[in-house]
Amino acid sequence: MFEHRKGLQFEVKVERPDPMLARQIQEVLGGQFGEMSVMMQYLFQGWNCRGEEKYKDMLMAIGTEEIGHVEMLCSLISQLLDGATPSAQDEAAKNPTMAAIMGGVNPQHLIVSGLGATPKDSNGVPWNAGYIIASGNLLADFRANLNAESQGRLQVARLYHMTSDEGVRKVFRKMLARDRYHQYQWMAAIKELEEKKGVVVPASFTPEDELEAQPHAYEFYNLEEGNGAKNGLWAEGMAPDGTGEFVFLDNPEPMGQAPKPAVPPTSLHNDIDMP
Image 1 (cartoon, rainbow, N blue to C red):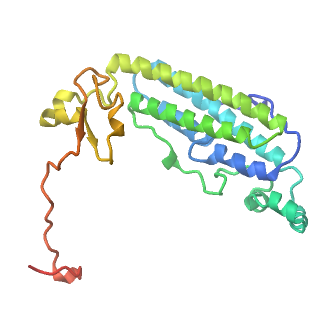
Image 2 (spheres, helix red, strand yellow):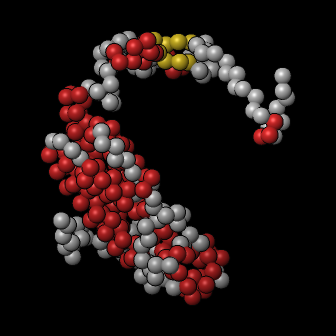
């Protein structure tokens, strides 16, 4: 059960309207790594979680918090759009300098949503469920969550430097702080699962199950000009799970046959000469 409270998680109060910034903020609302994505990702992972209750509880708690972040951004965008009208945009366009400033305004904020936020990114591309990951494997999902929080915080940090509005920056600082905590959270959960299950996903398919293919799990194929990639922990030393030593293979040779597909029938008109 969800309960909505009228108060926002943190105060949202901009210094002045800025329709262009409102458009830019749409990215961290409805973009691939926006708040809508992490909200839906955590909630679906939580709803689908089977087993240890603490992981489900954690997912549902953070997913519910992200609903609040979506609400904060909607409020932020709404305030930045206060006073924007089609006529004002037309008038501004008469001045070349103002036209350059207003040129980034999202027309859908005027035409479609009536000065409100939309579930889309900064270019008007609708949010879609293909952005989220909920695989049923906790370690795989938590690694995806760490990436989502890393990318989301990166984008908010970039937006922070794109405005001098202290009210907007105050909101961003709160979001940056929470996203930093969420990265800590996923790192801790990942570490716990790795200690319990091992570092490779899925742990239930062991190296021994790979049979004759197991040696290839430790080989770095140098398919790049030069050998700069040789100097890294991925190319020498023990594998993270302790099951083998990495090997750097310079100029690896193909180990399989050259494919020789059958010639299709002439009725398919493939323009391939018959033997």
